[in-house]
Image (cartoon, rainbow, N blue to C red; front, side, top):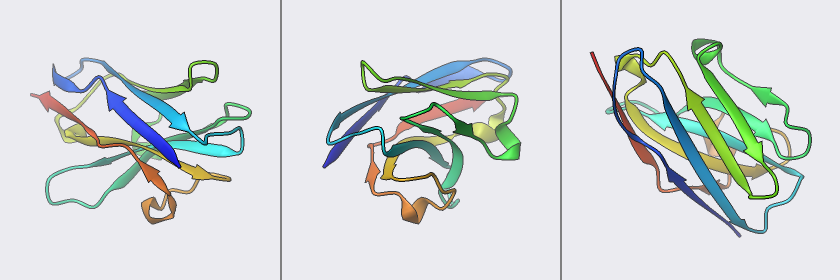
Length: 123
């Protein structure tokens, strides 16, 4: 089992920044991918980005490229989502996720989830 706990959400003005953190515990290993997803009101959960525990390679969807950055601290078992130039449409609950193997943008393929943290961007 893998346990994930997110933190760092809050209210921010448009064009502002936030950094979300995800603390991982349990049976994590370098064979896992760590991802961030978000879910806005009435919307399906969508992929925000992912990072490999082993080599730190990252993947992002086009709508966050250049604004969001994922990083990790293997020793602390922490994953971070740095969000810059935030827009009101980024408002959502943000979730940290983990899965064995390579990442996928399909949230249904991820095995472990945190409880989520709310991010609200005001205009």
